[in-house]
Length: 316
Image 1 (tube, rainbow, N blue to C red):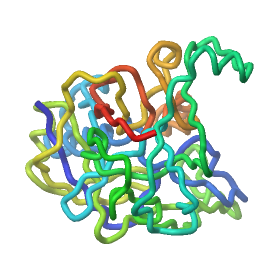
Image 2: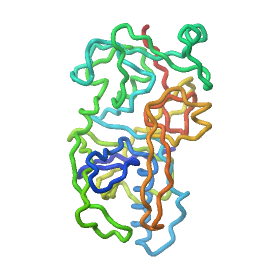
Image 3: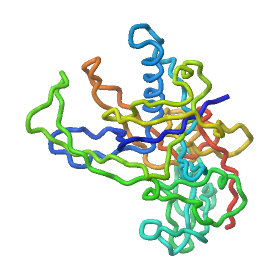
Image 4: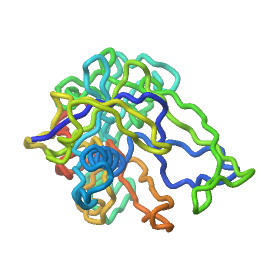
């Protein structure tokens, strides 16, 4: 069993990567969707505060509930990050035009030995994915796709099948001031960060493994999420859960920590990895640097029970 929460921010959101937030920085861009540690940490902290009021030892960090999914919800429909093996093959451009209705989907196939020899491609990871563009194949990076489309036999996008990044949120610049090790502001050291603001008809849905610690949150409430502790409203959401079925390919709905075993044995296709780091004010030392495989990566198994089955077969 799992438990899902629908989240609606009351302000902008900021999820930091590894770019230093120092004086003169003008483009510290928010990561989205955020790493699972950000989501689980926010809910865990809220549960601790409600249950213990800060006076009782409520457990260990390892007791944090595991995130099994992250989705966008619009008009009651769930969207997940587009798989890294999907491209659209059309003269229409996602960057300049909103309407992708009627655009055909192309699925990247494993590069067989014959093509590999012709192209002179060699890799220590074995087969790699490859897409042949008839017109101008464009990756569906940063796009969101209706979850039911992953296993449908259709290969042409209908209206609202795909949400572009601009359909989900807008970006806003925020100016801040650098803090020293004692959380004191440093005179004259300003920086600018790019926050995101969800559209009015968009909400986020996070799926956790069943964890009794979250019972303290109740069916609804408020908590702080991400950088600058922005407030969000949450409520228990019915209808989303981890997928359990047979499938050759799986697409991750959340960023996955980049472990060597995943990269060498289970990863099929992915966007560019990103890094998170920072400063731990409690320990007064740098946080551990972590590499993440972005959401939308395709694996050969359901990694961490956070993936959706990818049974899609498009026309070629």
